Length: 348
Ligand SMILES: Cc1ncc(COP(=O)(O)O)c(C=O)c1O
Image 1 (cartoon, rainbow, N blue to C red):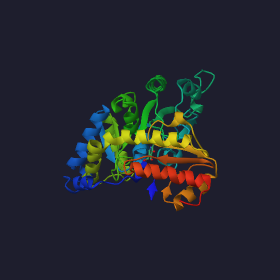
Image 2: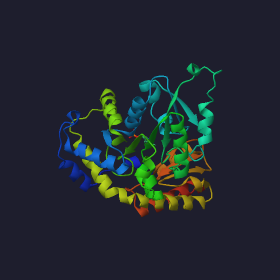
Image 3: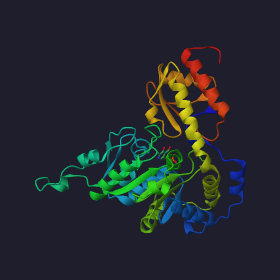
Image 4: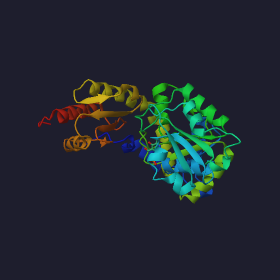
């Protein structure tokens, strides 16, 4: 089965498993695990922040950030297809009591003007007590829901400065910030610079089985550690999985540019095939969102029966994600299967 559902399907290599097996471990709840401590220091350093906390998932990392940044009743502003608002099980409401204001972005990117408009106008005639205080701005980069798109640096800085000027704190969901950097050449620390906190994941396209980190200045991360425990994220000998993350950063991160190139190749091939359409402007990293002429559910099922696994997203929308566990032959074979299905060929 050729699996293009997500880059989260990448598996640990034998070398990564070896690194896990030989990892020095301790009890991380007592801050005693040397491999977790090393990973946290490495990631904080990569992102140009003081400290990091290792957590099991990107969702937990984002939710801890929200809990640490906000009070119940606060307003979180973000893009409408952001993972935080769409795919974290209502965590913001359930765990932090916040409300969310989703903005309509273009390719996942919204403007400083949109942000200003949503914050409303302070005036003595309008009692400020009526409002949910807009305290937290969240940005996703790359933006999964928009097709793995990357925030232009100027736009990113502009929106962040505007949020900051309005007293907001800033969180970056950088589950695939590594991919943004691999594609644009902009260092992850440059993307991270305007933000108070950043979530990064090791389980997306890097082959690590589990793990994310929330990164920021030390007092914030000290407080975040309390919510990690409260949310059930306190782990014991988690150095075994932190070792996989360290191995991924050292040995696999450099390969992400191959996935980016393959996504561009894959998108171009679909774009030139009858029955498919791709908004090429949205293909910026390893994710390809495209439209298929036939019903997307039928298309996905037919592809699956011929050995290709992909996710339909709406009536004609599909998502394919390129990753390190695919060979060039897999990518070619996937394109062949898709062409056969859309042309109604019965001969796989
Ligand atoms: C942009 C983004 N943020 C957060 C997450 C959540 O990560 P996890 O699946 O580790 O909870 C994902 C998952 O794919 C994601 O795409």
